[in-house]
Length: 191
Image 1 (tube, rainbow, N blue to C red):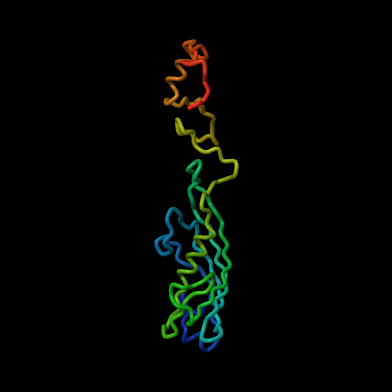
Image 2: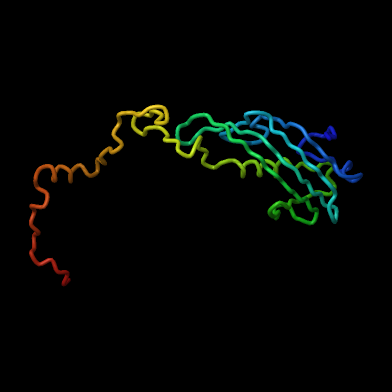
């Protein structure tokens, strides 16, 4: 099925002769994808079918499957996140660049190659978790000693007193709470 042309690109001259199909693995380097804070656990696999659309456009339908290596936001442990993206892109020469809509992109009809790696990267980013956690019941790290609360319980008190209230705490512990009389017995707000 692999036509030999690089993944994420379609030879438009070849496409004029009929549909183009591609299947294979992609580069797993995060720099090639522009991903920050994540990497691939293995090479992503992609397959697609590109076909001429109406009015000189191109339609590309396919899927991308990979596993991302991420860091849990609660416990900072390594985690794996499987991602499967199905895409349906339409490239239209009548759509001005910068005015693309959902799934519809500009197409330069004079270009020899259609590079759809940008929309593909967007789909991958949208399918990635914004707040990755290794499991729903992850307890995270202790904010005081930094111990992983999934592995062991620490002896830290979770109720650390707020130092801004210390003066009031001293008043209460000194026996002065509730003993102060108001300066004026008449507390009305007559103005």
